[in-house]
Length: 78
Image (cartoon, rainbow, N blue to C red; front, side):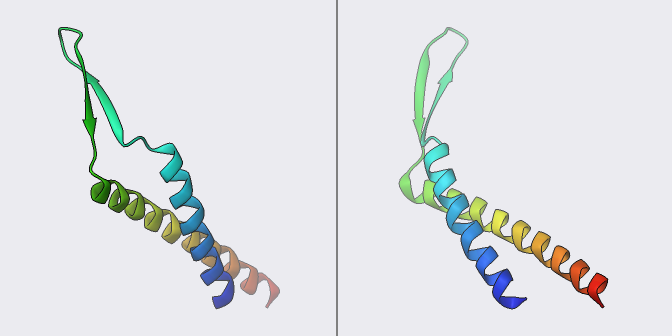
């Protein structure tokens, strides 16, 4: 069971990190009352830390889900 949890954590982290890297924009545009648009850029260290934090949260959720499913499967089989 440990091997399954480890693989789940690794794959969930890598997959979610890559999805967030592609999906989350580093530059956000804001529009004020007068209709002027300006861009706000997130620095690279903050951007990567944000993506890493979200990926860790998703990995922990995935590991918890797989742990619950495996535990239920063991109880049913016993």
